[in-house]
Amino acid sequence: MASYEEMIQAAKNSCPELGELPPGWSFDFATKEDNRIFFIRDGKKDANTFNHPSRGPLPKNWVLKLVKFDDGIWKTIYYNRETREKSRQDIRNRETPKADKSKDLWGASSSVVVKSQADFENFQREPVLTYDVENRFKLVHAIDAGDGTLGQFNGGVFVVKLAEVPGKLFIQKKFKADKSSIDMAKTEIKLLRKCMHYSLTSYHAAFIDEKSLRPSASLYIEFCDRGSLRDLLEQYSKRRNDREPPTIPEAFIWHVFIGLMDGLAYLQTGRYCLSDPQTTVKSGWTPVLHRDIKPDNVLLRSRSTPGSKKYFYCIISDFGLACENPKVYTGYQHPDSQQRHGTICGTPVYLAPELNHYPYAKNSHQQSYFPKGQFHTSKSDAWAVGACVYSLAQAPNANVDLCHIDMKAPPNVDPGIWMAGLAAKHKVGELKPPPRYTEHLKNALLYVTRENPIQRPEPAVAIKELQRLNKLSGWTHYESSPPLPEWATRTHEYFSMAERMR
Image 1 (cartoon, rainbow, N blue to C red):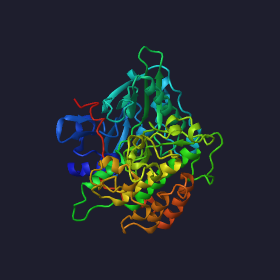
Image 2: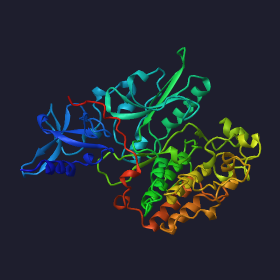
Image 3: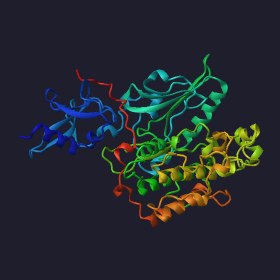
Image 4: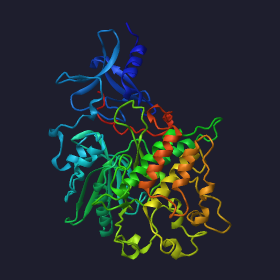
């Protein structure tokens, strides 16, 4: 007869999700519940739950339990108490039954996994609703209560879930009720609903209610469960004084680099440039500029399959400053007012060199406007991706995500104004990743961070060169590459409050 310890180990070996618990969580099995698996936080019995704290509950009537097979080996199975169906695979990824879907929130409740380029191109987005549906969602966690912490136009940023689909989380971005905020909502919702790419945040639902006495608007997008690139960089920075400071695997850096650049190439051309040999703008597509690429806005999301050895998805998020960039418009004719007037928008330390004043802004006008004749382009977005990736190559570093910036401001110069200037940005030749990385990665970084935008490639061109250099580096098989350590990314426990054990 197997001991208790052997049964616990057998359960962990046979079920990948049991090895993916947040810090402080463990699991056990309830003999009075037919060996049903449950989860424990810090050994506190009053926190016991049948819901996996980060992957969420199983569909209705399904349980995870430990059973003894005919060969005498204990393994876990997913079991449907009503139909008696059994499965060794996680059944959360199955499509939500139509009976459980809200007709007007079909896109948000659907859990269909988009697996290929053809799936993306054929997938139909749900229309933007004209009435408030906020009461259909349940608040799980407040990221920003709406006090302006994450943006002056935000009415709040929250983790929410649909009552009809309790095992799926979303991010709700609320907009303030004033006209300018509602106009911003219209632009962001339009762009996210238009864009469909695995490296771009996924639109699920939205409403814009302008007829009520108090107008309201909310955008519902995918929830990324592993934090941001900046969170990852901070974890590495905390360990910079270790006897052997950890470094980020080159394979992961390539994974981020190519994924983000392919996302920008899609915004530029409407094409999936990793597989499409064309680099021209697709017929009928209007290019999109993100204008605020930075580690905070690159989110990480787990693979849908528990125990997958593949790296997390890297997702470009926060399209609050994004705009369409019609090729027929330039300068003062541009339909976007900030592009038209050259008004500074974005995060100063991640603005491409041509968007900075030299040596730094010396008056209020320069602090509000780009240098004459300059404005955001797809090339400036590409430069910002290069700066993000350079910080990954420099980890662990005390400057976390500002490795491309000279932090030492001259006497009597405000540090913020200094860091937003061109003199504070290291020149291309000064960007020197550590020798542990291949020359091919270094060349790729130098290629996309060229100071002169005329010499810098557009994303659709850059992605082809990155593919070539990645192949030469030998780091193309990410599944067999060194994994990220468990401490490198955060894991949430938002599902832990539901279905507590009695």
